[in-house]
Amino acid sequence: MRRLSITDDLTGLYNHRHFFKTLEAELTRLKRQKTSLSLLMFDLDNFKKYNDLNGHLEGDKVLKSMGDIVKHSIRYNVDSGYRYGGDEFAVLLIGASLEQALAIAERIRSSIEQAKYENITVSIGLSEYRDPST
Image (cartoon, rainbow, N blue to C red; front, top):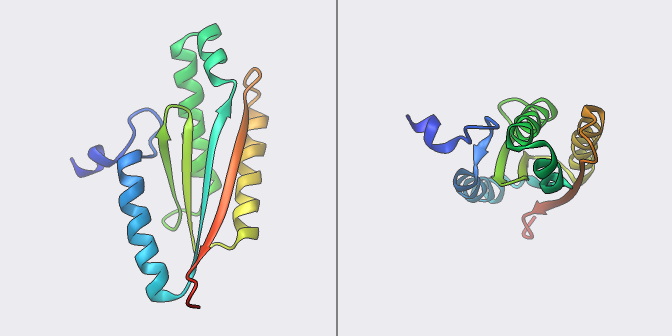
């Protein structure tokens, strides 16, 4: 029951609400263990147009595919992926440097490009947080 309450039905990723709980816990852990945390946030470019032209069932297939891409691009049982809302996604990369986060972002971008969804591209932002006291 708990798993259902923190998971997005369509993508199989964690949901928006669980993102904030996990982020808070990871920031606390980061300060205690003096490690880093990287965050990727991305959304699908032209998704609304794709959805309007191809229908919501096809749009749902794209979103489900994004969940699979995220899950296959991150470290199992270390990092976590989230459907932030609509066609927006977030990824928490535990202990990852900016360089490592960039490599994962590129893996996600490349996988989306290889999926060849008509005119769908991705915009990704990334940031590394380090405890300023270290």
